[in-house]
Length: 246
Length: 213
Image 1 (cartoon, chains in turn blue, orange):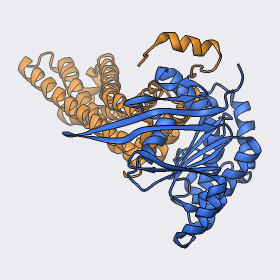
Image 2: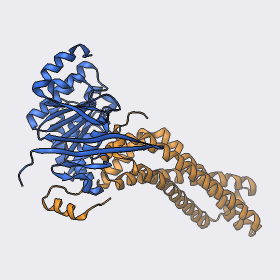
Image 3: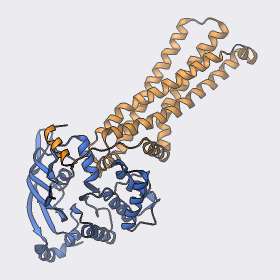
Image 4: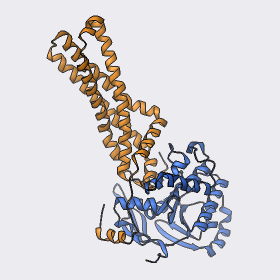
């Protein structure tokens, strides 16, 4: 089977949360096609449904209606074991709060998903060292998360996200807990990985620095896609909102 | 969870979706040990219930065994009352462990969610919590049983005098008590953790994204 052009597709995605007597519609018919190798930013104010969409794409939550296809597989059809496999092998996650396992060293954190995937310890360590060198932490292999700075922790998290060579890296506010300069470094690193390794990056963010590197920006408002801007259009709009930047 | 088995087998044939493998026991053991070392204070508090409960149970059992050996006869109502009090103590300590473990689960929600994002199965989360309970139970019950033995021995020494106590000390009976108390302590700690471990395993992977504690 030929490699599908779209790595992620959502179709008429609806997610409702029941809050007491009222039904909150967090996503209201979102259809989005993401090409392999794209760098996409999902932007929107808080409460816009950004995180909900992120959860759906990442197979972290099930939609009320509509479907999510990852590599043309409808993830609603997967059982718990297959969903775990998908999260382990196909998707890498990066979080705002880094979420490294505190009792494990940088290297152990990076090797954990490989051990879940069934690699032997030796293979996992070899690859873990390689990945940590790739993100510039070759000299911090045996440090625990609390011995690393925020930016370094996020680099470990990026190495961990790449552990099983996923096609997709999902980043939820990856720069949200970092200062301006470190945030820029992380964005540059993500872009580099996107270009060199061809990994699709989907980032939920409201960091305007992300716009510079994104191929497309999806603006979400009230659970709907307000507009999708392509790279060419973005150059102009960044100029327009330049005044807002930081 | 399985909604349509037909589509899954189709997907499997194309080699797209596989199944996750389990974490090797060696890795799980190391993780649990590190986890307990780093949260040592909290673990001691959680184990305190088992420790004191088993100490009390050991002292109670030994009281019966030793008096039986020396005085040949003890009133059945005293024996029954002692066992009744010890049982109540054990129930209380079980509830205490469940409570401590539930707190541990809510403290580690993000860690659990992250593990799930990385591919951990529900069963692994349960296994990690039960392993932790097993280690807690073993160390606390062993310590508790020793404390119970020592304190009970001292009490009986005071009551009968050294010569009398040593001459009649029912070693076999005390060893039996010790083993029984140890097994009860470990079993109760593990049983008390089943519900919190299940709760932990049911946490959604999306918990990894939550920021508030």
